[in-house]
Length: 452
Image (cartoon, rainbow, N blue to C red; front, side, top):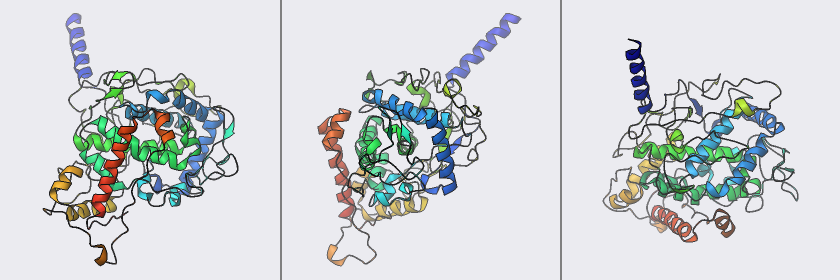
């Protein structure tokens, strides 16, 4: 009798394993950084200062620098940074259980990035000052870090006291909708808004140890949001193609880690689905985690356990109950959008039609594209939308209506130094830039009016 009962337990365990990791009992919700109050930014500053006093900011900078060549220029870019920002968040929550990394949608300020309220003196801070470009405003004002040597966190805008225009939201929306493989989506994101923000802010962000600037975390949280939107839009939670950090990409690959910020052998597969295992968070503008673990993979072993319990040097003895998203987080019960705004003709209700988290602008973007571009162009560049016209409606510059917005600016190129630093293939980078320019030119030649 005992033997039979034991066999039943083994069988049940095997079934549970095949079904994948357990669904999180609650999920903290990462919010748009633009929605944070000055008090919330002050709370973030308090946590960052405590973390820096215990050496965490420099450890994250050092670990990113040492892993640099393994986590850029290949498909591991997305799972590594998902796990990396999660680890930062988990450790921060040992200081304040309500801490959640916000995401910064930098595309919505693409015309004048330096004027973004998120880059204000009460948030991420403005430009650096002095010969060393020390960041003297914002949540990391005058913060001293120790990697690779002791210095003030630096920021050095790419055009003096201003920042050149970034990638328009419509370009990123096209990537989310039209890229059918993760390898392609990764290239388009990494060669576009990823690099543009790093280069635009400069200073710490223009180095391998960029993670010492908190703008790194909110920027990569946004890229992670875009990946989650892409995963949901294409129903491809386990697509992991192309080249990984050590050869052909495989879900069983161990995510690269450094001893200063270890991941305990976490695999790529362990971070593919938000809301499961220890990846207990989601985004305020994105689809909620699926009700059941997606089919197509076993789920494997989820080792995304925070190292905060073992490595926290906080002398104040803050609670370590944050790792699984079950801490006393005021945002835990917030509900992300299960369906995205979209006009008629959308592929399906779950398809993310725009990269923007702003619901009103997202709807205007969707309807504007549907009404301005022909079906063939939409099917190629914005396949998540249904065209309402058989041909492109061309803009007549001589008869432009007074309410017609300014044309979208063409996106910036990555610098030669940035391309070499990441060991990118220059031809692929140039091809991606030409594709982005094609999207802009197509929209500018039509009657489309950007809401951004």
